[in-house]
Length: 168
Image (cartoon, rainbow, N blue to C red):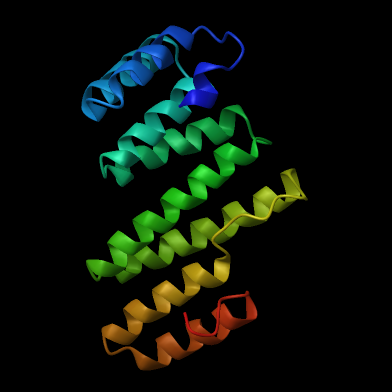
């Protein structure tokens, strides 16, 4: 938020400042301020980052993900936007695995893999964290807990090849 508030004038600075004012006291009010800004100044990357951050703080991960994607579209080479998006994907994956929505979790892992590949093409020096191996390990754990041992083993093997920690 502070980075967005100090960004060069983008037409959205006032909304970000308003969100910063409310954030310590009322995250919901801060999110409303950023959402109002997004409604007025469509696709502003600073407002999108602000809205993404505030929605995620409130645990509204599914709502934050499209905002993060929009922020990446507006600034494709911005490492912070890409890192924010991959972090949200991980949080969403944890929710899906916890709810045993493994088909949705598998699609999200495929989306994360494509996003990571795109990120490497656009910003070759960027190393997103967590790694694909972490995503695969979490999905493997969900399959294992569901009794799908063969699927879990295949995912764990792939995860180890992608750099997941051995104890993941």
